[in-house]
Amino acid sequence: MGIPVIDFSKVDGEERADALAQIDRYCEEWGFFQLINHGISEELLERVKKVATECYKLEREAGFKNSKLVQLLNELLEKKTDETIENMDWEDVFLLSDENDDEWPTKTLGFKETMKEYRTELKKLGNKVMEILDENLGLPKGYIKNAFDGGVDDAAFFGTKVSHYPPCPYPEKVNALRAHTDAGGVVLLFQDDEVKGLQMLKDGVWTDVQPLKNAIVINTGDQIEVLSNGKYKSILHRVVPQTDGQRRSIASFYNPSLKATIAPAPQVLDANVENKVKNAANYPKFVFGDYMSVYLEQKFQPKEPRFQAVKAM
Image (cartoon, rainbow, N blue to C red; front, side, top):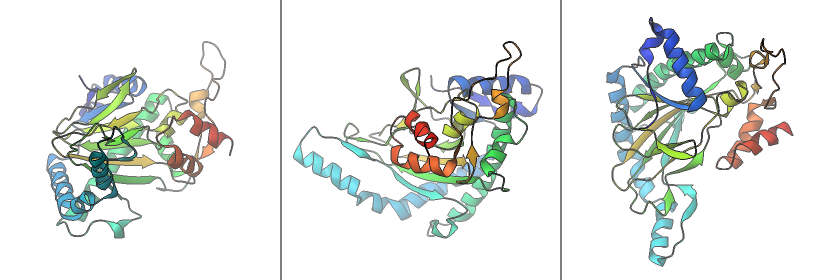
């Protein structure tokens, strides 16, 4: 089964209206969908896979094997108890952004050049996806991007998390990544072709986000939920550890600038013709940096109290 798949080339052709209607439905009913024919070359994606995998082996794996998490798991096994590890994830992860350029891995041949090229292409795709969300929500073109920029050209944050989930010998003892919704705007994920593990919550059932070669998975975060006044909800997702196969996951986040003010878009609240009643705003107006402060403390808890907390600020 898995999540819906969209042929993204159709948004530029005669079937545009149908493709946009599908995307609207998937945003509303799923919050997750996969794009194929998205315009990013296979050749580039193959290079990205290669440098990410090589980087893990060369620069990250030894650190993971000696990590506190692996030690904790070994201690639990020695004790032979039923205890599980609750507040850590079986994941090796690092962040790439324009701001931390000097902290990127340096020992892996071609890593920096390849990931810079990939991020440039992915950001263009992210902009295109946000313009489709604008159109589907009845917003002026560029509304979401401008809201994220907070009035300063290109101030929105575009970060890329490179994660590896090594095989876990005791998956019942630990999470690979605990269930959460994403704090920001639009997430563009390039996940492993073969090793599964990512699941999203659909109608109370954990559903696999099926591996699909060179597809880009899109999901919407908490800020799109706010801007759409709850039409496009952010969805709980998690990563389940696998006993065999190492899973690679490269997630890029198009997020508001920390200074941006986020609130339901006025056009979404406008009176609809039938009842002439303006829709109530279901979410507060807040500064994204304030939201992030709350999120970092409450990421793995229900999201509603986060909105309440920023409302009180």
